[in-house]
Length: 115
Image 1 (spheres, rainbow, N blue to C red):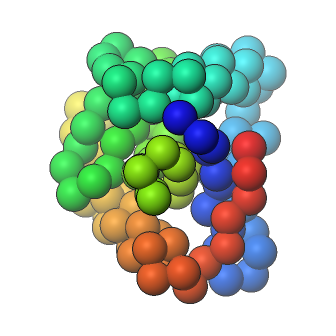
Image 2 (image 1 turned 180 degrees about the vertical axis):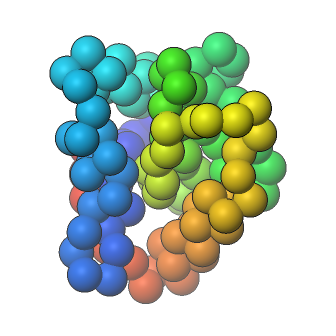
Image 3 (image 1 turned 180 degrees about the horizontal axis):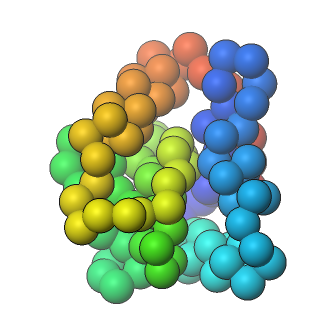
């Protein structure tokens, strides 16, 4: 794996970083460990740490938090969205956010921040 990047919105906001920063320290540390494992294993990362959701979108699964990402230019993971999971199924609106941000990155209309 090469790098893990954070999606930046059109105003320069970093929604995934903001979500992580809003969590208690233990949860932040757990997410950092999962991101580190993503850097090491890349496409080989599987359950229970990660899962494939479809349409090129994957999720990191630390406890009740979900960090959504996709792979770009083969070896780069882009963290595009994050939520606290409240139901068994990922809400459709959150998947739409992931897909919209993926399109923005792929079409190079968005900036990235290296983790």
